[in-house]
Figure 1: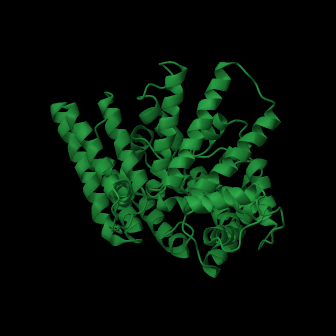
Figure 2: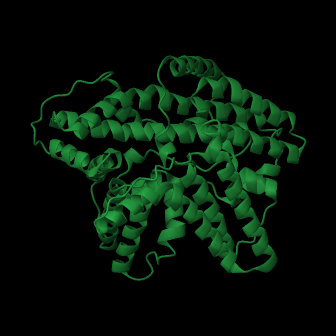
Figure 3: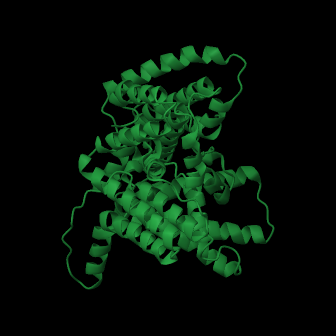
Length: 459
């Protein structure tokens, strides 16, 4: 069940919202219903992985309760190790096994383990909580609070990465508050905006991107320069509108339930430096990497060379978190190198003309996305060669070709969806009519084409 599917919008969501508000006066029942609904939502994709989610949640909660009773910090370290072991088994077993076998000259038979949906997100969420406790945070929650924290369906599969102290205290607030209608209207508006990003923009760009990257992968007919740049720029826009659209829908859905999730995107393609980009792109992951990897490694406290090494290692691990492949590792490594260079530049007090900084940052980001999207390094190499003009400039023919420049304009110049949803517009009631018409159109669109899953579901 996907956010942009008709079964979710017309079936699951209205039923769960109605039950939630009917139980507004009953805190425990309201939470239990949301936990059950979240498990149904997760199990709709593959019910076989619901026991894994439940077992890992209960194991983490029991570890926390034992820690609260004994104050043995080794329990928390064991909990972190347990979560990492589960992630390594399901996500990295074949990658690590194949590379280890290659080092000693042996072949590797893939285990072909199916990756549970969103495992990286709900594992990281548990790890952040255990580390916070180890850092002497004393928030120990009841079972219902903890289960809802890790399973709440809007953010379960692809974030935002929510910390315990950002949301659990909100569970006790009755949804029937004076701002209830404002939260419902703003949440609905944000959901419709995210739905538009996903269905009307990202899914329209996807066929061209898939066709051109597929041609590069096969290698029989090389791409020309125009085709390669259109493919990489198209993917940069596709992943932005796909993932930011998901985040908008997740934040909007939570708001419908009276819960506030942290922001996750802030016009990243308007960034004027690589540091600025990572303050705007997948913001909850950026702060996770900063607080739970970069700072514990030493951050910027041990000299410039150590700082450069810390940021490079952090981004390498961040790249590996995205996927079990060398393309992801190199993607993270290139961003780590760029951030290290940006740090050296800043320490010298140098400044760059902002338009030039924007152009260089955007070009770098688009080039790096090739490593992220290409199915293997050979395909990435062919893409880079074509982008460098190895097969001539040529021209490109695109289906719905107007969408590429329009999407670029919206991504770079247009207002962010969160600012639109939070704006105090004087004629706000009139927004309901176009929003309703847009929702009807998007529902028809979701039923009339072959849907594509959110890109970040595979991570």
